[in-house]
Amino acid sequence: MWCKRAFLLIIVCILCLIPAPVWAASHGSAEAEARERQLLFEHMQAITGVPWYYLAAVDQYERSIHKHVKKKEKNVSPEAKQRKLGIVFSPEIWSGFLNPNPEDTSPSTISFFGGLGKDGDGDGKADRNNDLDVAYTMASYLTEFGFTEDDIRIALWQYYTRDKNVEIISNLSTIYQYYNTLHLTGSAFPVPLHYNYSYRSTWGDPRGWGGRRIHEGTDIFAGYGTPVRATKHGIIETMGWNPYGGWRIGIRDVDALYHYYAHLNGFNKKFKVGDVVKPGDVIGYVGSSGYGKPGTSGKFPPHLHYGVYRDNGKTEYSYDPYPMLKRWEKEEYKNKKKKKKKK
Image 1 (cartoon, rainbow, N blue to C red):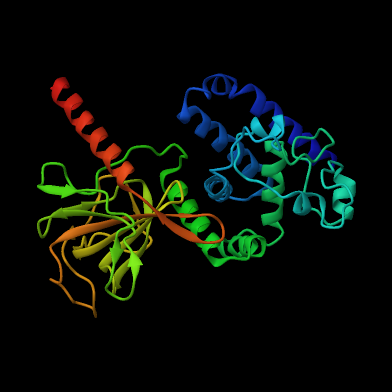
Image 2 (image 1 turned 90 degrees about the vertical axis):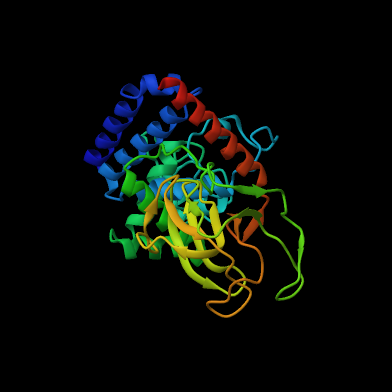
């Protein structure tokens, strides 16, 4: 017990001393903040044995589902506003459902009432607004089930009780393990800019085939065979036929968003489900497939249906990708001009 506490104190000192310049720069550098979080997860791996990329994946998933929580809300404490991690434990889970004090920070009483909260920095308190305590608590919880991938998936299901959460976190961990970094930036427009294409905002427009529904994406009209590209770093979750979307590909990106590419003429045979992709990778080709049984094509002009979906922890919903498409298009044109000037 004393050896473990001493090791924790050593880790705290390392976190405080080594990344000091990172802390100073993190306010203006996404890369520095990402590296800071990765260092924390790597240190937790050294302590608990839980792979850092799984802790990072849990953190990113929680970050995504709490994305719209405003830090300016009155019920958010100053300590919570200073946090770097996205993992959030409810008072009941942290302190114990029967604990009369939902904000308890005593490790002994939290343990007595069956709470998960643990002291991760050796200060004698288990504070759910302390990133070290939170990271150590999540890692410790996962170790209770074992260290294999299946063990961790079981632990995540027990915690979230939803298959989709487990799937998203597992896929995020694969991306982080593949690239060995949390700082994954850059984007690409879904089709190469030198091809002829056109698009406008069509999200929410009515659709009739297969029943009354709305259009959950933006249509990018282009010729048959125009390359279709991954827009962000991500992992291929789905690939195959869908009666509505025809030949389609679904990619989960590093922000936990799901990108849906539909009506394809075919796939890039280089890729399969479970493969990691980067911005600009050609994943398929524009077509007019869909609205019927496998192989149905030609019921509408060739185009790429591009949709984006966000998961809120309970359900997945679509939102208008048009603003993102315009931004990515503009950024890519800007980067091209920069490259020409350098030449």
